[in-house]
Length: 110
Image (tube, rainbow, N blue to C red; front, side, top):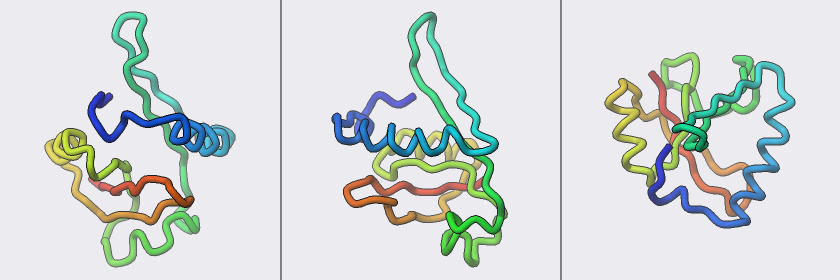
């Protein structure tokens, strides 16, 4: 729900997102939540359930003392980072992009 940079992305970013979304939406436990202001779609969030032995976690949780990562945010999205911190989230670290040219996401836990 942040209209500022870095979320003004181009056609290549959209194509990459849609490719990843297609894989996520068929996974067990997939959920999608839409935010509307009147009839206008103003934001969304989605996620999937991951098992604790999923290779996705490899290296991310080592030594962190947490069980689950609760969200991922672009580190340059300062307004989003401040909002999540105000809600009690703390930074866990960055994970390398899944594909070349993809943005880095910072993972935060609460």
